Amino acid sequence: MEWFTASEYWLSRLVFQRALAALYLVAFLTAALQFRALIGERGLLPVPRYLSRLPFKVAPSLFHLHYSDRFFAVCAWAGCAVSAALLAGVDALLPLWGAMLLWLVPWALYLSIVNVGQTWYSFGWESLLLEVGFLAVLLGNDEVAPPIVVLFLLRWILFRVEFGAGLIKMRGDDCWRKLTCLYHHHETQPMPGPLSWFFHHLPRPLHRVEAAANHVTQLVVPFLLFTPQPVATAAASLMILTQLWLVLSGNFSWLNWITIALALSALRLPDTAPSVPDAPVWYSAVVLTVSALLLALGYRPVRNMISRRQVMNRSFDPLHLVNTYGAFGSVSRVRYEVVIEGTADDVPRADSDWREYEFKGKPGDPRRWPRQFAPYHLRLDWLMWFAALSPAYAGSWFGTLVERLLENDRATLKLLRSSPFPPDAPPRFVRARLFRYRYTTWRELRETGACWERTYVREYLPPTRLAAERVRP
Image (cartoon, rainbow, N blue to C red; front, top):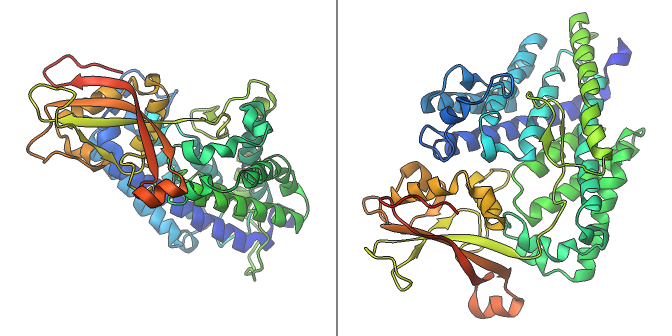
């Protein structure tokens, strides 16, 4: 069965598995720390209400059997524990079947969370983590060399991530074809990072070079993943460098890091793999059968990629085994932000003492410099970016968010950087206003110390109080 495995990828598998375990840990930690306010029993989009109209076959989840905030917390923290164990290499101490079952646990737990997470878990990297995590179950441990077919499938995912993103750009916004999208992207991306201001102020010719290099990396280089070594390693290395550039330029949750992990699995790293026996027959049968199933299911993302009506970030099955990916098919030219304010005044007037709520990641105070949060995912901050694009994106949860702020709800306030009101004195009214944000110039930064300049656009939500009928945007 020498044809079945590739011992020269022993170290590549090890590095990939530990990187994936670290990303699982971040994902479960994000879920554990944010779920109560977002999807808990008193969350903005409660899981029990969602499950009441959701059949199991549409979205398989452990929470169909039982849901409580305590049970969710147990699942999320259990996912953290198993991920930490995998990161520490516990799977190498188990028999092959035990290691496979151990890798199956975080996949099943995270699938249960994603399938009830609603809009808070609608991002492409959620499905990507699940698709990659399912393949990790088949990779084996120190008892066998890495199966060639699984290594191929990991490259196939990486190909679809990069090539799909490249196609959606070329078919979408014409600024990608004109190489001008990066004139705007660093300023209007969902959550800027600490270096995004500087990226935005790079010379425009360099922005055009960035865009052109992006097209090469996403539309040409992916094909080289399936060529002989060392070309495949060179292609994967170039993808890693590109992803690290993106890591520096913004906060994109774990999207860049899981892409890097996939590329690591394609590297031919120097190592001295131990001598191991041939793969057991049962293991070979399981790997080949499941791989054949995944390849058969893969026609749907392929059909989507070649379609003129290509869509981004969609799963084609309830288990998220095969998915389509893509990012920034269109780029905003102007940045808008929803600023939420409260007042303790009995009558809300324009000259009332309105105090602003500060979010952890999204822009607020023009003088506050963005921080690095990725790969940790600030879900509310990301959805606030969508809410600024259109109130339609926030219609299902924004009104409840305002209600929770009027209550000084502890779980909700934990999602924010700061509240302007003490715990025992909630605001009487809360309002939301829409502002246009732009990066300051070098001169403005020196003179004011502010990285943003903002201009009032319009009212987003009029002053609202608990005793009044809730108004949605």
